Amino acid sequence: MRGRAAGRTRLRAALTVAMLAAGWTALGGASPVTRLDVDVEKLRSAKGMIRLCLTADPDNFPNCVDDAHALSRSVPAGSPLVRLSGLPAGGYAIAVIHDENGNSKLDTFVGIPREGFGFSRNPPIRFGPPRFAAARFQLQGEAQTQQILMRYML
Image 1 (cartoon, rainbow, N blue to C red):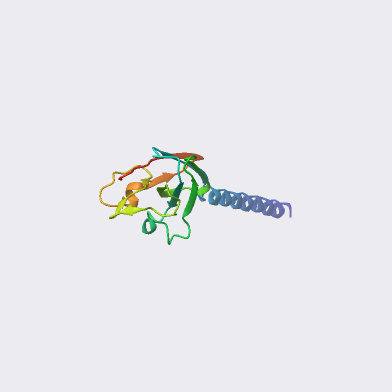
Image 2 (cartoon, one colour):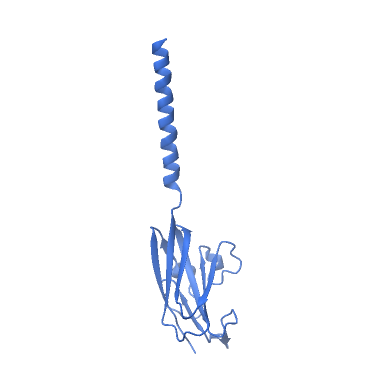
C-alpha cells in the first residue's frame, strides 16, 4: 500500500508542477501592458487643441474613424504632452492635428492643410498623409516616448 500511496503522491506533485508551468507559460505569452508618452513639438501657437489618434489598424490610419479600438485624445495646445496608459504591446501609428480654431477637424484650403499635422516616426510628407507602415512603431517595455514634430503648410 505504501508504494501505491507514494506513487499517487508523486503523480499529484508532477501534475501540480505541470499545471503551474503551463500557467506561467500562458502568462508569459500574454501581451504586457505599457505606457506611451506622446510629446508634440514645434507647435505654431498655444491656441486651440491637439487632437491625437492612436491605431493598430492600417485600414483606419490616419483618421481612426471606423476603428473601434483606436484611442483618441484632445488636450489643450498649451500642454503638448499626451500620456496613454494601459496599452498592450504591439505595432501602432499616431496621427496628430493642431486644431487651432477648435472646430474638431483639420481645416484645408484647396486640399492643403491650414492647420498643423504630424505623425509618429515623423515620416516625409509628399502628396497626402504617409502610409501606416511609414508611421508604424513597436510599443514594448514599461514606457516609451514618441516625439512628433508638427508641420504647417500654410
